[in-house]
Image 1 (cartoon, one colour):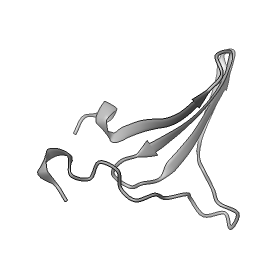
Image 2: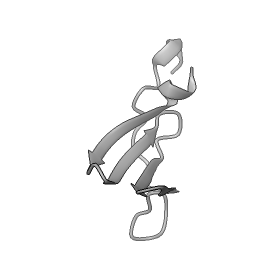
Image 3: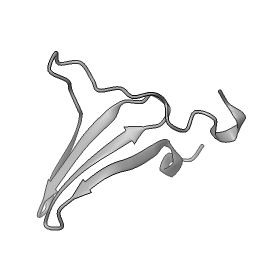
Image 4: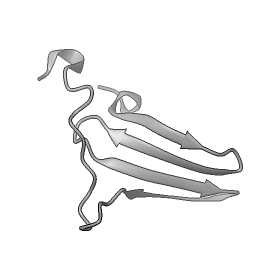
Length: 66
């Protein structure tokens, strides 16, 4: 699995001030990415209890793995 296959963008908003949500297809963890101008940041998306948002694994069957 290449790096580009592991992460999938599931939400994108904006052009100058960009907000995106990316999902790690191996772990199911959601990440929030935001950039504005020359600065940006990435962090795990957290629920109200402070735990990472995790979804069912989306592409687990890639390459014949289960």
